[in-house]
Amino acid sequence: MRVITGKCRGKKLTTLEGLDTRPTTDMVKEAVFSVIQFDLQGASVLDLFAGSGQMGIEAVSRGASHCVFVDSNPEAVKVIKKNVSDCKLTGESRVLGMDSIEYLKVSKGGFDIVFIDPPYRQGTVQQVLGMLGGLLNDGALVVCEHEKELELDGGYEGLTLRKRYKYGKTAVTVFYAGEKEDE
Image (tube, rainbow, N blue to C red):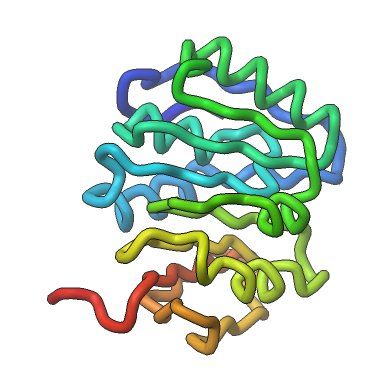
């Protein structure tokens, strides 16, 4: 697994061993970043259920100003810290070892891009989407990676469904914070 482009291009990232973590494939990561590429410059990013931190690292590598990485697994937190350090992004990063839902309860918000990639089939994506309303800047994007069978609607406070993509067993649903995007 590597950083695709930007100032950390080609940097190899460490990932967690075992079946508890499902790293985002390069194909899905490339697709996600082609969708959000024009929203990255100077963005404040939140990477929930961060795993290896690859999505947040890719965002900062491509021009986001900073990223908060949140994961409850202590081994994941070690991996994220190593990857952030190896990419020389410690000044643009904050790594928190805590439950993502608990983080949302205490966060001051102000995010422009949020990545959500929780364990599949536990209802966590819907729970998180219901909590994001007051934590997003106007025009923010929320990128949800989930099992393709899950159909997320646009019924979350302050969020409008922008687009849904399918890649094999994975789906990515993107929401926009606001009523209607400027065309």
